[in-house]
Length: 209
Image (cartoon, rainbow, N blue to C red; front, side):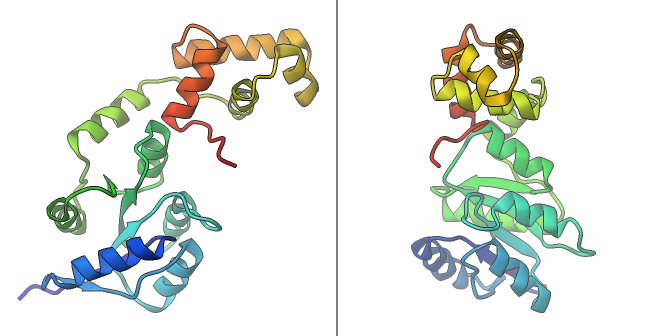
């Protein structure tokens, strides 16, 4: 018999942790470690116990999924990671893969696909549903926004004018306008309103805080 795949579930929602643990614990090919309620707890567990595959939520309070991935990259033999998220936004997917995730699934994924993903990622393969892979490919082809442009996008989404944006960042209205024009060009949209809605839809900015 091949050794069992050791899986660590990391999610801040108790119902999700309990559901995944219950579902996957019945599979003879898997050994499910005690689940972690957040990124910091997951990193602490991994100091004591070895895991082959991480099922990792992205958006968690404290240490989030992307930060966990970056911290794992500094370790000698990190577990391979599958993102299991409620969100399917381009930027979330892109950042996760950039940070080293080997798979990306949405939480309404079937049990069969989760098992398939665990097996594939454990063997060293990537596991990305076709539509996710396509979105990553499209995202790679787009120009990167600068940190300042992302900050200005947040101001656009809040309805600030160029003059008001200039005041916030201590720049002239004309410089603010140039930043906005660059954002519109990079996002391939027609105006500032579409830039803001596109940025929210893709997950470039989040206004839930």
